[in-house]
Image 1 (tube, rainbow, N blue to C red):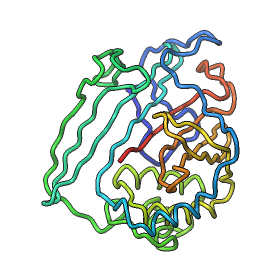
Image 2 (image 1 turned 135 degrees about the vertical axis):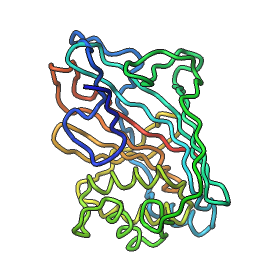
Image 3 (image 1 turned 180 degrees about the vertical axis):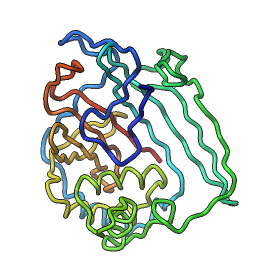
Length: 274
């Protein structure tokens, strides 16, 4: 089986990490090099919804099409040691509706250290900052989410995210909501008004509960919220001052000897920047 990447949806909640042909299972108790550890909440955080609303009243920052995200995924299979795949992606749109995407192999936790990439059929090491791709796309436009401009009203944004999830029912489970948030942030950098609206949607998500203050993967203070599904814990991290989404990540909640993973091992994360 060839390489699989799983940042795109729909999600498969059972062993979604990338697998590589011929990989060897690692010995239990030997963590793969470069794997980030789980984040643990500390003290309870502030009332993010109130602070997000106050930030929105100030009118800045504003909504911008495009994204800047650092991502990391855990690769594993039956017969090779697990691998980690960090990269940074920047998408910028132009006035004529064309856009450019740049993807760089880099790990901010280890500046200057060689980075593993999934270019080609087998993972390989490249220099930190290696440009995996630089692509310019011709003008394009769509009035369907997530390409369409997101609204800044909670009810309208919920409907937008439900359309992004393409559930066909108009409803939105918490798993689908988190998936749709990731799709949204992979297309747009939210402004203060849109972030406040999103906080308004998230506060009603069933099973999404506060988990205290954390320091995110880029060293920023955040307020964590977690949601559990069988075999997996998903963590959403918000800026405690503005409600902006800083990150979204997933971790195993049970050991799996087949792949040498333990409860708490991180599957993948995305950390968004302005």
